[in-house]
Length: 289
Image (cartoon, rainbow, N blue to C red; front, side, top):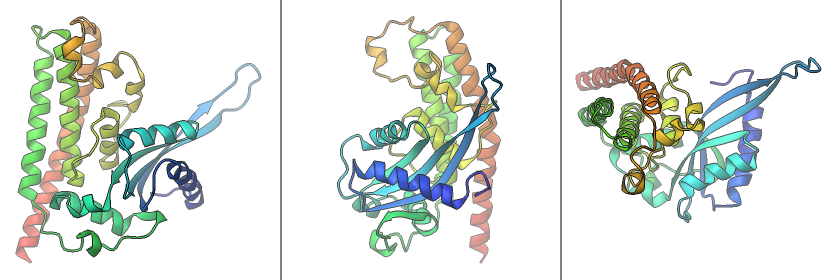
């Protein structure tokens, strides 16, 4: 939703700057904008009693289509945008070749078609849905969405419970917490967007969850990914199990990470269940007509 805090001209200016940064590193066939978050950080100098100044930050959700995609671009390009904009802009980037959209699963095609139809074209040529085979999509598989989502939630619960057991080594607990967080995010994203993310960095997944539904900062904040050792736990990679010492994290650190993950799980559970029920009701209504 646009407000007086971020009117269209502000968004257009920000998107133009982001586009120029991206064009230096990738050939853009089409660039679509489909969402934004903004936040302001106040500063105050108590020495000279300066009034607080607001430094606005914008996070954009973008779909970029390119015929040539350098390796690891999904991870690298957002980092470049953040760095080159001085931290003012960040992006969640969906990056695909047109032929990948053509070959996408039916569920993912719902999300892609909605972006192309309802999102804003920022750069390049608009795509016709028919050319991407997005014009005729089968009916939504509500049962498949429900089963996938509930499986992810069940795994998230199980991993979180295992991580809290005293007999688990610290490294295993960290791995289980990270896995629980990932599965919870994947289930939420699929329930709302019917989309399988192409990138699985925890912060990337969390930003997509925030796109699906607002997460209060007292429940779970993206600032946790900037705090050590919480960042190391939530971003824990399974390869660490091969090389790291078992006492890499303290019990207190793991308890804190577990608490945050559990808080997010309890918050999202009723929201995800409500979304699944909404899909089921809509499916039944369609069957009657």
